[in-house]
Length: 298
Length: 298
Image 1 (cartoon, rainbow over the protein chains, first blue to last red):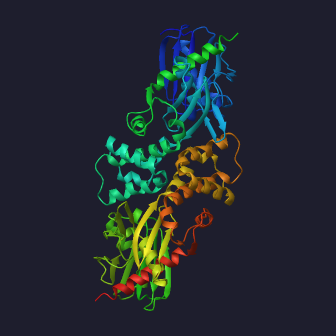
Image 2 (cartoon, one colour; image 1 turned 60 degrees about the vertical axis):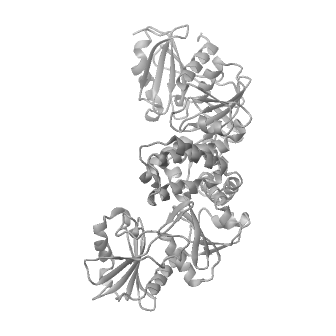
Image 3 (cartoon, each protein chain N blue to C red; image 1 turned 90 degrees about the vertical axis):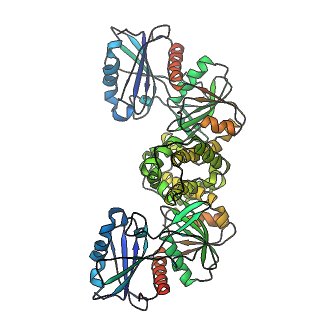
């Protein structure tokens, strides 16, 4: 095992991901554990970090730069949201006191917005990572996930953003609602696109269109593989209807996302200009940029 | 205890409700148990019925008229959906074989629609009950519930209908989603109406407006009692946006419903003509009408 010059951490609700980096930003080691913020009390974060990455530190002192839910009020140490407009993952990092003198821990803050009310925590670092490679980016980034973010980025700043509960609604409806009885494991890209187009054109029909998935299955009128894809299409379609002010006038860069539920194809059909980039790389690049910006701890 | 001339049953997913009636339709006894369709195998329905109502039957034979989920494919005996347009709770009752010769059991069918796909099972009996008192009703009925129904009724028939998952979405989001952390037990009628108006005017923003409930609570910007009411308002508002073709041109009769989440007030604000009637009475009246229509079993 290599000793790190510093450690980058993406500490989410479910997982802790660390990268050991040398001074030039090259990755020497990368690890992941299930010690997410959701299962830890504030007093347990330092031990969870050292369990996963302690052997990478050596004699120290080593910088540790963290993004994500570790900075939430229920996390290790609160890093209060910065209001937009703001440069992402640039200002407002909070220094966390540690018992182990070998680590110097800083947590990056999320971003907030008051009109309309919205927050992000973690995605700002992905955005900073994309901006590190494309500092002149002027457009919209879409970060798909449990809570999908649509973000207007201009002049190196997050100008405004909106969060859509698309992923969480899909998970709830497909596993906890009456619709779960109507699903198989299949997936029809065609059904996704058709349902997405319907919801984009008539978002007000969504909660009735959801029940039609159940009715169609009771009436024996569902092609195998289409029910889950239609659910995803309906939810993605209403998201795109709500996000129209973002993508109608600006090019869209989709940061990460899954193979199923292809937002890009639906957006392209709707007339948007769409590009893609990888999310994992973006988070790490953002942490590297934040570390470089904050410099060495004195 | 009085012996019944016949027994009316509303057999839902969660509960079994029975009324013992005399030949004139007067209620001699009324009982309820938790032996809903959801917890019974097909072979267990007869015993569950006799447990609750056996002492009301006497020597028999007695008619038993049932509406609701007992007629589903997973119920006691399937009563296949009748396609609309159709007179509700009139035709298609299925006779169920029983081991006990003292009962003659009939289950009323639900209604189905293919364009767009939809089903109801139980609500058709409430509609028949309203029509028994108002046979010339020409308008729209709204039946609030887990799956709220909007129904165009004309000439004694259900012409078309749509089901909205408003109640189920409210239950899932308020107890299973990230929003649950933002709720107290309070209720603000004003917040309900404001959120309902927003969703009615801009339904495409719904899945972002949902996340704003969470963001507002993280940012400390929520009045006590308003988060749950806003969630209900947003879901009711998008329902009303989708149901606009029903209420824009016709008067609306709301059959039952709860005190919270006042659809009637929101509809009235939107310009609809709204009346109310009681749901429990409607179900019993519909069963009485169905029994009268089907006459005595020979």
